Length: 311
Image (cartoon, rainbow, N blue to C red):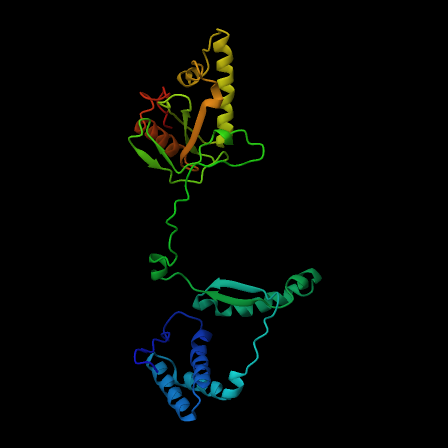
């Protein structure tokens, strides 16, 4: 026995199923029997086990009975015990443990009798399901997470890579975006965001101009649907513009007119980055859109012209 062993067995007052507590003296005695090759050492360790379990509040009669039950096995049989054969398709009823749930097994037996007359039910429930108890979350479990968070960023603007997607060629695959003058750089923490994402905020930049002239917008529908509306409006605007017709009534005049300038070819000049998302919350989405418009100064150095109407 190690000097550092503190014998911290489960407290008898702990809220655990009785069979778990009953199994501790039994399983520990079997373990001692396998380890100890000398009968005298085995007796000493069994006495020590009984002493420490009684100190942890276990019933003396129960402990003694389980130790004697385990001592009935020979060391040879324990060391040469064949592996247990697992039963296939064994149905288990898993619930969080509570002391009053000890009668669940009896209830399942009663219900199973009602199912057996029906042949279909007998196929699905050939035997009474096992009752499996799982731990309720302790204070430690609520406060401490044993899983380390992935430190690598999963957010970013990505292409959906759909077979017939006509938007992917405009999407910039990146995890960052910057201001017009590149004085500030921002991480895209939401996502991954792609053509199918909803409730997203996007940035459309000009791929021809050195200043990029960003435009910030948002949509609660899928980004693909929203951009198709922009593409339709751009085609309509260009047609009217080059035919010297009135473009009155087409929204985002400042945005669409920019791509009718010299050396611009319209939609093919767009460089799109999906920068943020507030899924399911339209008010926060609009507020965040307004935040990015002012943070990136797209009214003065971009193509936005109207404030976002906050609902």
